[in-house]
Image (cartoon, rainbow, N blue to C red; front, side, top):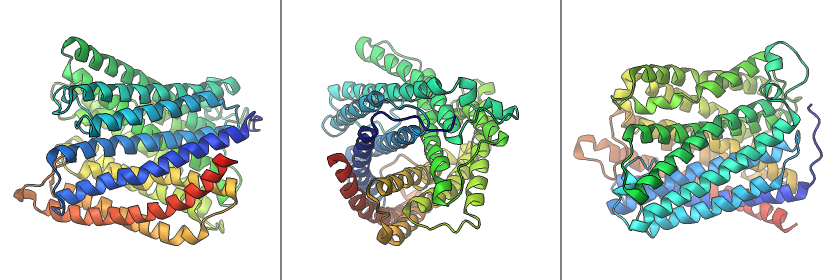
Length: 481
């Protein structure tokens, strides 16, 4: 089962992957600039209008989540050809609809003044102070993105299930102590992630239908239902894109260390099957403040939030550390990105668990502690996993490691990233509120910390620009080949 299926169009898949990489790395610095402008405004270095601030917040959040979700999927799609036949049309379909969705999104925000924030919580889209058509354009952009990603996800899942039965893809035979047929960890993690996404996309469809019903008819929706659907989709999507990154790590990291491929041990199979189930209910910690939410659901949310990170984080961390130990690994961009991504994933997960405790949540959840933990596991976790794949892909297709970039890029990115998220953590611990464009005198320390955070983000931007130049040149050659 571990032998690769012959890919009918390897060069076409290579070019499509290069197109995804080019798109993502060109949008990434723009989204970073949006974030820096917000932090400098909060630091009173710049004076942005409240409208522009929330336009930037909306664009920054949705772009960052979107580009790194599709990049993690592109990495998985490219590596999946080692085991199954990967059809190009779902990936191409996802690319086209992603471009359409991004154009609609940016048009709604910057031409139509749409500014609800990236959560777009109901009923804010209907009360945003912008052009009337902007709400429709925004909903259509989400529909385009959602349909494209859903079809792409189903395409990958179907490809896996043509080769493996569902129990085999979930490695249930390994849980039962059997060694055959062998399910690689990459297939296990990718399958659990795709299965986790399917109900999330269904929830997104229901959510958008209800939004359109109110937009077209004026019939009001249940606010609690809309919030549950929004966070079920959004929270699940953000977690699953991280797991796609982990799948690429499991597939590539052993060879980077000169070690044999990972095997699916029973404890690995149990951990990822548990993650599949638990991640569906972990989002409830976003609704602790909603007192009308059934109490039993709140208990489920707290328990699930505690359990969700532990199996995957514990197993992956142990695996990575054991791989590095006495490996004689030659450090360059790809292994360094993967390694530090895991280390910061632990920190971000710890921050999330602390916030998911009900007693802490009442103090922390409306503060900058929340941006602190999700920027940690995204900017310093998930993004690093995708950058690890991109670096590996560039070496595979061009033969160049970018060794001269290794030290400056890693030092600037990690140093800047730590300063950036630390400013958020300290502000959150000091009760500085989130989602505001200016801080009142009561929490004046928020402005000082925003300045430090902005400076840290500038270091990250410098590293990213150096890296982008390296990647763009080489991926452009792949497209031209």
